[in-house]
Length: 445
Image 1 (tube, rainbow, N blue to C red):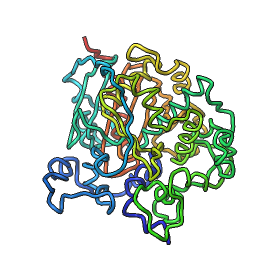
Image 2 (tube, rainbow, N blue to C red):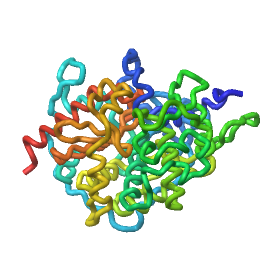
Image 3 (cartoon, helix red, strand yellow):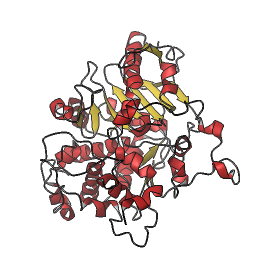
Image 4 (cartoon, rainbow, N blue to C red):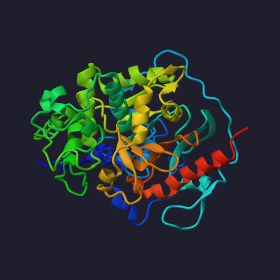
């Protein structure tokens, strides 16, 4: 049997696994999808009724829930369709967000990457199939919009933004001396000693400079990304399935390719391996660790949650779902060098290390034509632009953008029909930069 027999149940996992890079080539394909208004999940009435009409029912097991445009409903409702584990916010009061809403941001104009007609901020939201967006300036909420079925009290898939939380937790443990970034991964997880990860250092995991064989070519049914997705699929496996049955079982099978430490390669398996290291060091899984070290201290409004495999292991590479304001709170905490809600949640040196970034030369080897001069550090994407901006990125348009110079944080959830961010970067990155310049020129009174 091949992994292809499991295709119906792993479309969602594939979307998460492919990350910000693997589907980039699709950005150049003809855009034959319905636009944001025509694909509005609220207007289309997915999963409404008791029961819904047969042609409006979405299921995980047949893959229907992640076919566009149905996936625009699913990304705000994953918990209804698959097993998850909670990330508790605890029992304390939420950290208040000052509100100074502005009516001048929709008209901000920018030039898309690659040319074309100027575009307004408001128009870019529809162009990028935005489900919700929040802008903080100097810690205050200045802009908030929701579309489709996402509401302020809802949660949305963060996709590969999950990786940034895992990388940040690892950097926190490094700063505390609980994790040595120079030690081999096998020192912490002996089960990985015979795999490609065993000889890599923890730092190489954190910066994704490992030399591992992990093809994310979705067109190849034998690519490792399919085996990883099949292993993490929580549905029962066919009787004749003989492959790995969990994320951990998959990771021990990863073989070497190339040398560690020579180049940046965006591969989701690195984050899953790092999650295993964190679990082994702390005795807490990623969901528990995130709750205890960040989410409870952040003063989040809502619990978050993570999708899990059949053994209950959280998907460290892309399974996080959060409220939009809470994602913005996390960004504001990082913007403030780890201080938020009256306490130092991250040591300042953790944020300083993130902002310094890594080697742009190593990053350039990955071939991101739209991201010249960027680097990747602690699972954050670092622009090295004039404002020192850095961000978390996830497939289908998830973004957390921090501009320290402009004192601005943007949190966005989206459901773009093309997974790779190369499809939305031309109308996202310059929009973020234009908004930063506008807020610096015209700060709120």
